[in-house]
Length: 391
Ligand code: NDP
Image 1 (cartoon, rainbow, N blue to C red):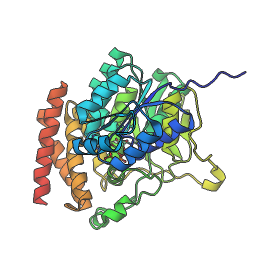
Image 2 (tube, rainbow, N blue to C red; image 1 turned 60 degrees about the horizontal axis):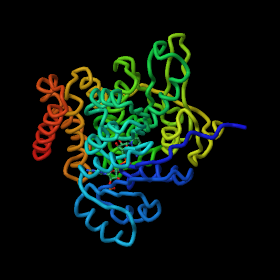
Image 3 (cartoon, protein in one colour; image 1 turned 90 degrees about the vertical axis):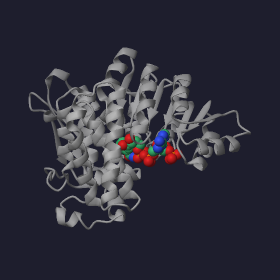
């Protein structure tokens, strides 16, 4: 008889009302994994639905108004409702779930990551910004607390899986694949005229709005280089980005004997969530099987770092060290929010992010503690906002 799969006995899903969060709950439902904690920000209607369906011990909305509204709606249930970022961290510790999935968007995910890490257990990490901002600190605290971080980001999940094919010391380099986004092959002149609707039309993945914009600028791939440096302990020059339009190969590991082990699947985040929940076991996530004959061909190209400068800017940030990646992220969060609200054109995102990161490079370099890093990030955010005002 085969052994049963090692499923978690309890789950916390942070950012459950978002694109990844909803897919994480779908996997939990499929395998009847009890959910102890759900968190969101403003989407009260969806959170009410989720709370009634999963009956967690606690639900937290980062936005206090949303929390008050939700508390009224859930009066007839035993679910405990609270509001604010500190409450999210408190409830993570109280839940102390076997697996905490962090699918919160942006810098707001950092303190919840640290709270989850403190609990030990397993952190299924989608919130790449936690590692971009404070990768060294997150990794150190995870080591100290005995917390295992399993990436949910599809590329890093793929690399994690490919690394099971050899010894870490025998890795030559990582191939990080990129779809290239909706504007692959565009010149800077063409990029000057793209609209919000063009930007949100991602060719292969359906994701939240912010990461969809990050994919179009290739900032997302830049963040993923930084994420990979922290997760896998390789320097940035051993991480090669490869444009692969079909998003079938999710990344690969090249070993010293020149063998390349790649992971392939139809693009679906539920595969990555399912793997992060059960690894090293494999459980179905409800994904469609891969039919390579239907895909027909797989293509590869070098990224265009002139048209998409944020890729190289991320490499510069990780080489600079300290709070430089955090200032890159802060400037990007401001610029993308301004683009999404129609304040600035697409092409200004890269200008604002590059100028902000470079302005702070010297002071950011020496930041080492969490308060120092967050202070630099806040200053970079203010500076980026001042640049946005001038566009
Ligand atoms: P979404 O925008 O779809 O969802 C974000 C989630 O975070 C929502 O639950 C939202 O709440 C919550 N949230 C937003 N702001 C805050 C805040 N200030 N405090 C607490 N919670 C907040 O994002 P995605 O699901 O697309 O992405 C989530 C993370 O996963 C990101 O870090 C992204 O880079 C990463 N990722 C996403 C992938 C994808 O396929 N979408 C793939 C790989 C990584 P509410 O909706 O209630 O306002």
